[in-house]
Image (cartoon, rainbow, N blue to C red; front, side, top):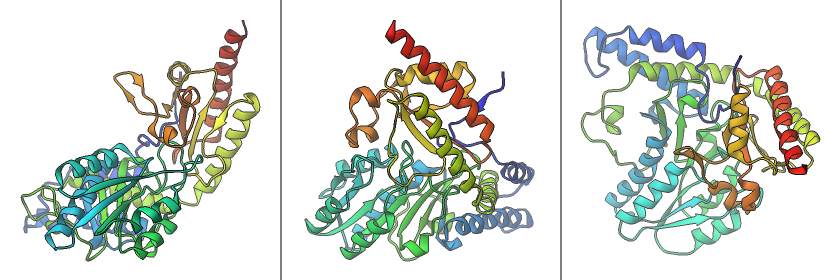
Amino acid sequence: MTRIYLDHNATSTLRPEARAALLSALDETGNASSVHAEGRRARSRIETARGQVASLVGASPGEVIFTSGGSEANALALKGTIQAAAAAGERITRLIISAIEHDSIRDNAAQCEETIPGLRVLTCPVTPQGIVDIVALKTMLREGKGRALVSIMSANNETGVVQPLADVIAVAKAHNALVHTDAVQVAGKRQTNFAALGLDYMTLSAHKFGGPAGTGALIVRDGAPLARQIAGGAQELGRRAGTENMAAIAGFGAAAQAAAQDMSSWETRTAWRQALERALVAECRDAVIFGSNESRLPNTICIAAPSVPAENMVIALDLDGFAVSAGAACSSGKVAQSHVLTAMGVEPHLAQSAIRVSIGWNSTEQELTAFAEAWTRIVKRAQARVAA
C-alpha cells in the first residue's frame, strides 16, 4: 500500500537539496572553530547556511543564531531576553503570550514566572476564529510598570490561522515592549520579513519546511538584549555555546534556499487546500473547519466530523494509508484536549473530533483527492453506525 503523508506541520519531508547538502557535509572533517583548512571549510558551510536562512526571512546573517530546533530557540528568546534586560538594569516585569502558543512557549513562560522574581506571565485571549485579541493586548501593555516582552506566534500550528503580527508589533512598540514571534509554521510557506516587520526576535525550525530535524534558529535584532543559556565556547558569536551541528545546519540552509525559490508554488497548494475543504464539507454538512473565516496558512486544515472522535479518525486513516494528526498532541497514545481549540471556545465534544491535515512542499493534488475519498468513507461508516 502506498502511504500518503499529510502531517507536514509536525515534520516535513526532507528536500533533495537539503539531503545533498547534509550528506556532503558529513564527508567533511573539521571543527568550525579551528583555524586550519578543515576548520575553515566547516566554518564556510555554516556561514553559507546562515546567509541562506537569513535571506528566507529578510534578516541579516549576523542576526541568525543556530540552535537545536524551535523549542530551544523559543526558550532562548524568553529566558535570554529577560535575563539580559535585568542585567542591563531594564527589568522586564510582564511576559505576554497568547492563549494558543506552542507548549515550548507556554512551558518556558511558566518556568520564567516561577524562577524570576517580580515577573508576571499574562495570557492574551483569542477570538472564536483563533485571532489574538488586540484590544486585550493593549490593556495588558498599558497596565503595570516596567518593560514587557510580547511573544505571539506568526501562525497557529493546529488551525493554520495567521496572526495579525503587524498590529501586534505596532501596539507593542507603542508601549516600548520587545516582540518575539514563533514563526516555525510560517517560514518557507508564506512570505515574512523580519526587518520590515520590526521584530526583535523570531524562531525558525528546519524540519518544518524540508530541512533536517534537530536544527533551528533564533533571529535576534542587532542590539536586542539576549543572554546565552548554554555556557562554554564562543560559538554563534558567543550567544550559544557548543560545537555546531555543521551537517544539519548545511541542510537547513539548503532547505531555506529551496523554500525561498519555491514560494510561489504555495499559491497552487492554497487552491488545492480550498478545493479539499469544499469537498469535505459537501460530503459532511455538519463538519467544521476551524478558523475558516480568517487568513490561514496555505497548507493547514483543522477539521472535525462530529460523528468521529479524533483518535478513531487518525487510526482509521492510518490503516487506509494516510498520516495525519489529531488537533491536539498525542501523549502516551491518548489524544488530549486541544488548548488551542479550548481558547477559541470550541465545545469539548467538537474539539475531541478535530484532526489536522497539513500539506507539504511535495504533496500532490491526487493525494488530496484520495484523502477526501478515504475521509468520506470513514465518516459515512460512522454515521451509518449511529443511525443503526
